Image 1: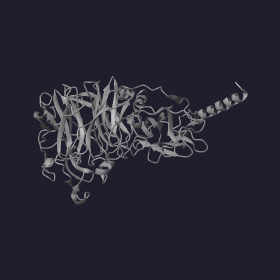
Image 2 (image 1 turned 90 degrees about the vertical axis):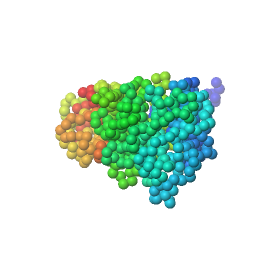
Image 3 (image 1 turned 180 degrees about the horizontal axis):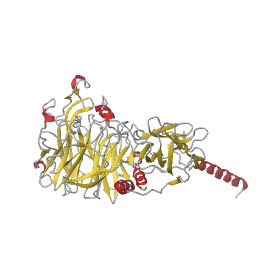
Image 4 (image 1 turned 180 degrees about the vertical axis):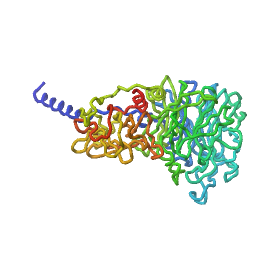
Amino acid sequence: MPRKTFKLYLRITALFSFVLLQIPLTAQQDWRNITSGSTIPDESYSDQPYIVKTDDGAWLCVMTTGAGHEGATGQHIITVRSFDKGRTWIDKQDVEPADGPEASYAVLLKAPSGRIFVFYNHNSDNTRFVLGDNPPYKDGQVKRVDSQGYFVFKYSDDHGKTWSSNRITIPMRLFEIDRKNVYQGKIKFFWNVGKAFSHKNVAYVPVHKVGGFGEGFFTSSEGALLKSEDLFTVRDPATAKWTTLPEGDIGLRTPPGGGPVAEEQSFTVLSDGSFYCVYRTIDGHPVFTYSRDGGKTWDQPQYLRYADGRLVKHPRAANFVWRCENGKYLYWYHNHGGRFILEHPNRRTIAYNDRNPVWVLGGIEKDSPKGKIIEWTQPEILLYDDDPMVRMSYPDLVEEGGNYYITETQKDIARVHTIDKNLLEALWNQPNHKTVTEKGLIAKWTNSSGKYPQKIKAPALPELSVRDNTKGDFRSKNTAAGFTIDLEIALDNLNPGQILLDNRGPSEKGWFLRTTDRNTIEIVLNDSRTQSVWACDEGALSPGKTHKVTIIVDGGPRVISFVIDGKFNDGGDTRQFGWGRFNPFLQSVAGAEDLTIGGKLNGKINYVRIYNRAILISEAIGNHRAH
């Protein structure tokens, strides 16, 4: 090689090596981030991407879509098919055309024969407004007309490639809520997001009845079931007979003393044939109930609880329950609310907010005197978007080949996500998990002398945000990394200012753990530019008592969670959110070379564990039980 050429080669090699060194090593994209999913094609607005598996091996997805926003003229129903688990889609079909009356909120149901039914709202009379409250509607005219009219269906005998030309109306029996609306039931207000299901060859389709329109759009609501015993057996589906359940004049409402909103009922069938139903409210908590007679009658509704008896928090957002092929259950919800929604003067409206991240519970069947029931684990984060204002909802679950897939929409893009089955298995195994997790454990200290302060070498924590050298403007990039602090403490008192752990350097860069004036402990994260702070729930700690505390800093959704004595902190009655967000631009919180244990302390620390990842809440519970 000529000398000049060799020198040029060395320069290029050196430059290339320098560039590589400037590109930080980061974690792979977090599968929980919704942008990692595969897009389902739409026409702009996208809602309720629900899927059934057809007999020719396809995934058939139905969607409410349109060129405008939700509820706009031109909203209609389409279907698409996929043979590669949602990566690509073909055979787009209009179930209803975009230039017809509004057609909305479709759900699918497959018969044993392979025939597929699609059920949806249809504004068959082309009504251009209905009467509502004034205010908020000028002259009391509600111009959005996608939640009234007729509940209809079509069917397909070629796996969703085409749909029947005839549209069949399902008769719905009037309830008290219908007769009390402004039209005395002559026009019915309703919609549906609940998946249709079958049991013993009988078809069931949920519907959500509405009492009127005003603040928060739907001012009152309750759930019902449409049942057909012969839909799957008659030659002509138009001749099928339908019954509206439950029996009587009132649908599925909130518990006694609850609010007027009880909607978006989601049903599943338990192993003994009992029906289980969950639904949203504006009371700060979701509601559940059981039917032991095929939906004719239902137990008195109750607010949903974890297996340990604590109430589950949830806003006015869809919450879905699925029974998986292994006989266990999953529950999709958003993990905040309580009295902070219930007591808010504008709760009908503000309760729609904060649908990001999505959390999931695992459900396990147990026996009761009445039949099977579901006990719910503590939560894990399932999906999120980097922007907290982005909302995701209306999911569906698909299982194939032992893998789990979930659809969702943020009303502009609908996607399919492959779910890490390890997270789901951890949820279902949570009640029996009682071992210390070793994965990612980078520091472990046990108190042997009882003296404070003590120092250990500070473990290297991952960076949370880095420079993206692949972008021309060198913007920041979330690494989706995280870390966990796990310790056992016994404080003589909860006086503020006690320093439990401290990794701060001279410029305050680093992290530390201290007591506060609210009888809590908080973690402080500082990269010398930005500081983020979050505390445990009030009442979670008691002086003189030994507590096991786990603090999970999850760099994907940028959420800090506390688990104390094996219980996830959800805010209780003292705050709407038990989990908190840290600043998305927080970079490295690696501080001093040493970690000081018990710098200022009235009590003792028995052990400290530090992980270079955000461990699961299920793992934190296992750590708690291990001692």
